[in-house]
Length: 140
Image 1 (cartoon, rainbow, N blue to C red):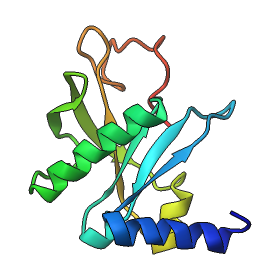
Image 2 (image 1 turned 45 degrees about the vertical axis):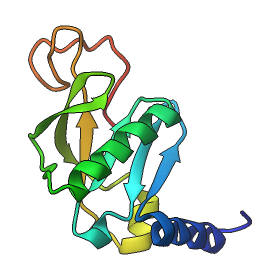
Image 3 (image 1 turned 30 degrees about the vertical axis):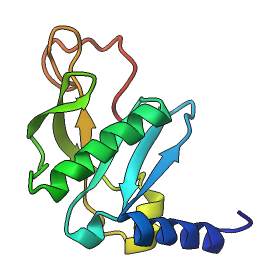
């Protein structure tokens, strides 16, 4: 795509056709790869964010999250759900919209988001005491 207007038109077309768009952002030295939804804001939901997964895995987790929302399962911060990532529980955490540039371009700076995180081998989620910090970061 040649410019931002064409890209945003493509995003809006995806939202119109599918209800949402998955926006992937490549890794940088100061930030891991992450993927987030664009389109849930219009449905009255918070956008969903996953960090540190391959694009196909991230899309699968986000698709499962969107299905839960559409089925009436709230994904507010602090909720734990099953079945979104290879049998691991997923916890929803507060997430800044600072890095959700495409969502902010589509909806404005008031986009709300939650991040979907998973536990380490001992069952501790990021930010909990004793979490294995040697694992790849799940934080933006």
